[in-house]
Image (cartoon, rainbow, N blue to C red; front, top):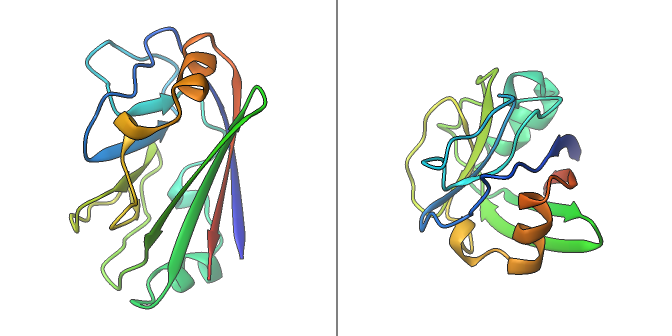
Length: 137
């Protein structure tokens, strides 16, 4: 089961955060937003199909997020959790931790923003279009 989110990079993308990564519907990014990979997302977790959300709430679910921009691809794997809310209308956050809020869509991520491929990050900092495909199994 997949959900696809389209967004774009921004000149302030640095991807330096050590425990999260984020895609937001906001149309701006300040330098403090060091976990944010892209802005102007066309969807947020509140827009996801209810069946997809239910699948993410399975403690045994594997959730994969694949980020594609300007010929660069990065894939992060994590897991689902019964406590996932997926109700944010603003942003989606992947976490290396077990912390859950309305924005969280993936827990126990393989890595966070700081470990994303630097060529992908550079493309996003140049404003490249981003496609995020989230798969739950």
